[in-house]
Length: 190
Image (cartoon, rainbow, N blue to C red):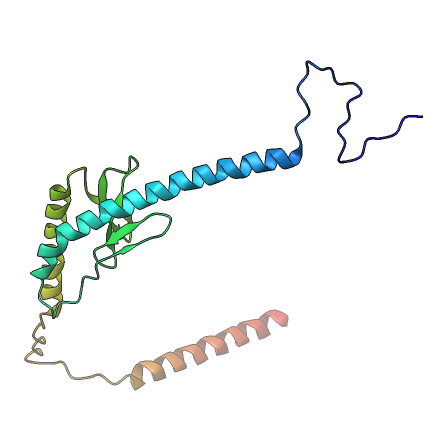
């Protein structure tokens, strides 16, 4: 009588010495975990490199933001570390790394989607683009802060008409129409 092999004993009847030994699931899981950890390590290294490049750019932007008056609170610069690290300039504009992880991409979120304001490997090009953006935002703020004079009233305003007479006229016209329909309905039923 033949017995089934237990979980601890591999089945050897049917295997040839030249054939590879069957792979155990536990060994396969261990190899898969090691591969996943290696991939995760690469992703973490890439993310750390992105953050480092963004920090270099952030340091290059320090002289620009040192010139912005303190009473202007449009800009809130900082690096967010998420799935995609970003250097935020304000609420709607940020810099992130391009697909090759060496190119800076300066983008702005708008009502119509995200637009690319500048893209370059060179930090000085991005600093120049951010400088232009900051200047435009400050001008927009100045225009928004300007108080326009109130429009002057017209010299001769027309007197306000009474709205009672149109209502009375409409009421009489509606009553006459209902009376006419009632008369027609009475004549047809005869």
